[in-house]
Length: 199
Image (tube, rainbow, N blue to C red; front, side, top):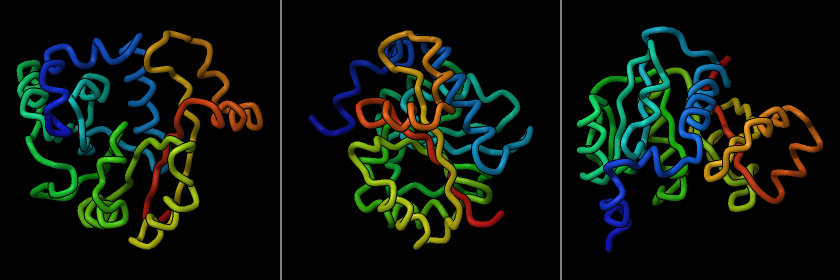
């Protein structure tokens, strides 16, 4: 089975089954897309790479959303719900026009060459790149070096403490807890990153 094929039989209700509380998870992610780093404004375009069924689109009202996924079943499921999705591999896709923001969630490990992917994204992204990172899998210093090498001079990070598989509403209050947040990240959860070229 291909990398993308393993998701084929799950596409119909992907967002609903992936998250214990899809609304809390996706709405918090959408809020940070808007606010982390340079803020997005009404009418800005967002390109969501490796978007699955594009469930994030429902939480980005006022922004122009386009999702990209390499699973035909995911794209079909998202389109059936009225979302604008494109069938393509995140490593090769480039939009026909520049976008305000590009996002990649739960998928940075699909990059064949992370620096090359960041370079490609920098070529069509005007304001910022927003992505999540497992700090136990990737060193933030290495990722920062790749970003800086392709022109993303600024990086802002924020812990993301909304669990995927359990509904624990109060946990996100710890995202700004400093030392405690850093301790939690040693064992679980991800970091949301916003990278941009200039202030």
